[in-house]
Length: 80
Image 1: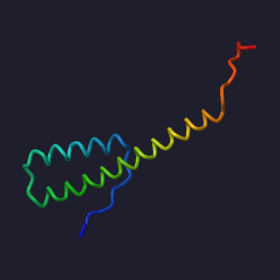
Image 2: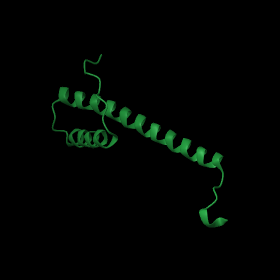
Image 3: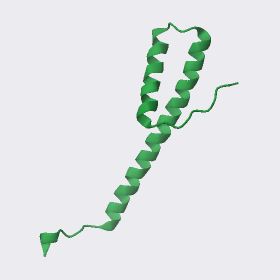
Image 4: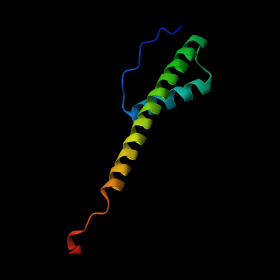
């Protein structure tokens, strides 16, 4: 069972940067077991946060594209 605090919302870039640092630390294999487990758990939370932010961005892009497709072509000012 987890006793860690929930992640505070962060910008995608800062969450990704922290996740990359955690991965490097874990790969180095220099942390004690308990600290490694806490870092792993935090990494999973950061991964989920990044994934959610990417999904939101992808949805927004799709909505913009659909709006542009539904709006149809626009006449340029010099096309008269």
